[in-house]
Every structure is written in C-alpha cells, then in structure tokens.
Amino acid sequence: MLLEHGFYEVRIMCIPVGKNSGGLKDPSVLIIEIQYHGHLAAQNLSDTVPQSHCETTWPNTGCFSEVAYSQSTGQKEQLSRCLQRGIRRVQDLCKVLQLPTVFEETAVSYFQRALQHPSFHLVSLEKKELLGGCCIFVTCRQHNWPLTMGTICSLLYVKQELFASVYLSLQKELGLSVPALSLGDLVKTHLNSFQLFQHAANVPAPFVEDKEKMVARTMQIVELASETWLVTGRHPIPIVTAAAFLSWQSLQPAARLTCTFARFCKLAGVDLPPPAHLRLKELLEILLRMASQLAWLRVFNMDKKTVVKHIGDLLQHRIFLLKNAFCLEDEEEQRAVAPGEGSPGSPPAAGGAAQEEGCPSERKRQHEGGPRPLLPPCLINPRKRLRTAAPSASDSAITGDEPISDSEIEQYLRGPEEIRAFRKAKAWP
Image (tube, rainbow, N blue to C red; front, side, top):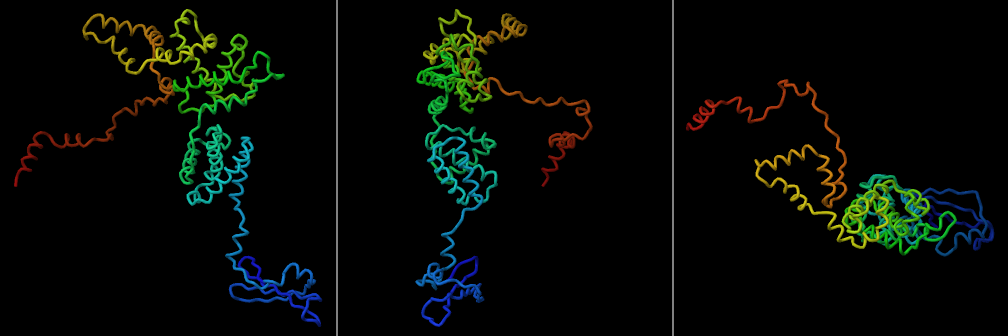
C-alpha cells in the first residue's frame, strides 16, 4: 500500500511470521519501504502489530494500489492563513453590525471569490483587509439593508477614498450588481432603532410619539433637505437624525421645545453624530427663509424655536415657498446689474454708488432680506483658504538673477537697425 507524505511514497506491507504462512494468526512484522524520486529505501521495524489491527487498518482489497500525489492532495487542501484571517474578520464585522446569518454567508463567499481572483493577488495587505468590508457593503446593498460607506470606514479606520477604490474594483472584477441606496429605506430603518415609540421608565409620557406619524414627517423633512442641496455629498445619518429631531418636536411643540438635541438622542437610544448639529442649523435656516414667504407668519418674529411650531404648514406648501424664498442665478445677476443701468456720468448713479460704499451694512441687510440663489452649502459658505505670505522686502528686491523671456532677449540683442540689417542679409541669395 502506498501512503503519501510530502514528496515521499511510503509502501507498507505486512509479512506473516509463523509456521502457518497462509494466515495472519501470529503477529506480523511491519515493513515500510520509502521511495523518494525513484530511489528505494527499505527499513525493517522491530515493532509488531496484531492481526486485528492489520485487518482493520489496511484491508486486503486494494492494499497495494498506488495513489498519485496530484490525485490526493486536492481533497485535503487547507485554507491559507490570509483567507482564514479574512473570513474571521468578515464574521466579526457582521456580528458587530448585527447582520442576519444569510448576509454573513454571502459576504464570506464574496470574500473567498475575491481572494481567488488574480486581480487581488498582488494588492497590498491594507487593501486585502478592506476586501472583507467591501463584501459586507455589497451584500447589504443587494439586500436593501441601509448600511452606509461611512459606517464601514469608521469600523475599519480607513479613508473613504481608499475604501471606494477597492469597492469599485471588487464590483468590476467580480461583476456584481449593486443597487443604489434608497434614502427612504434608510430613514425607516434608522427610526426603527429609536426607543420613543413605546412607554418606558426613562422616557416621559409627553415624549412618546406614534411611529407612523414621525416616520412620515421625517421623510418630508429629508425630502426638503434633498431639494435644498443639504444631502448631496454628505453622510445621510446626521441629516436623518436632525430631521427626526425636528419632526418629533413639531408634532407636540408645547412639551418638547425645551428638550435639547443631545437629550433627544439619549432618550431615543441612538448616537449623536458630530455633524448633526450643523445639519440641524442648516435645516432651521431653510425653514426660516421659507417662513418669511408665508403670509400669515410674517406678522410674527420667527426664530429657530418658534419656526418649529409651523413645520407642518411649511411642508404642506413646500414647493411654492421654496420658489419664492430662493431665486435663480440669472435673476440674482439681473438684480445686481439693474442699479447700474443708467448713464455712466449721471449724478444719481454716482450718488447711489457713494451711498452703497458708505453704508455696507445696509446693503448687506437688504441682500440678506431678499431672495438668494439656491446653491449648495459649500458654495455659500466656502472653507477658508490659507493666505499666502506677503513677499518681504528682500524677496521683492531686484538682484539681476530673474528669468528673462525670449521676447525680452530679442529686444535687448536686436535693435531696429539690427533687425533691418538682419532682414536685408536674409534676403541675399
């Protein structure tokens, strides 16, 4: 019989010992022949084994059949350490995210396919570790599970740019079909984790709200945020959390206006994302500008507290109020050009310009009161840019080592007479 061990072929034979050579009644001597690359080495072992052990371990049928190395190793192939570590990483991430078992199995199968693909054989170790998170992200998108890229990146401690590149490569190489994330499904799933829809010891009675009403109102506020450029290019969870807070306050404003955003998240049992305060501020600014266009609200002095009471009316007339509260860029340019349409030398125009220069605060107040273009927040409030340092006196001094252009060189080397002489010499045959 041939047994396989590395590159060795091991032949084990049982030779009966005793008077009766036709049977195996007596103990037998175990002889092992080791063959390595065509060279045969035999070794007799003094150890003996009983007949029963020989019969049960090595049956007589086929005990001398040879098995090729290439035919047996594939059945006992083990997973590599990298694959084992990656599978454990995927399983741990699924447990942290509390995903169903079906999601975990699908993500593990995607991860195994990705590591076997030639495109991911020579990638860095960091990208191989990201493959598990990308497989989980793909699985959640395919099952319409509201998991965002920012959540995965925060768990893996990686930048979203690197994660996005690996995710796109995985989607392209494996040919995976990934549907887009629905913002409505994200709102419903995020609000399902709130603990404000049933009475509890730590939740006061006035703070308990009907789930269907809160989901419907939150959806309307999120749609308003999407129409006013507050969702584009941003993490959706802070916006959904801020919209849920406003909708919760607007349903019963008398008892809930005094509740802060941090306390609301604590009572709901959800985390307060750091950008949520900024998203709440931007939403309130949009609502205040819309409230200024509603006829029966102009008599009141609206602020960020009182405008919450009228969110229902503002959402009901959302399209009309947005159209009146914000103007197009063309209208803004026409309004800016209109004061200067008179003749350049007319005295009223000059006086108006002088008045505007003398009262910049008044001009700013009029500009803020009127409609402004509906632009993304990154264009309305751009980030401050670093100012370049002013050149010092030593840098601005002329040293004579400054670069000279070709036109200046020709001007210095050739005067008018030289140019005429050069042309005349060029015209000679």
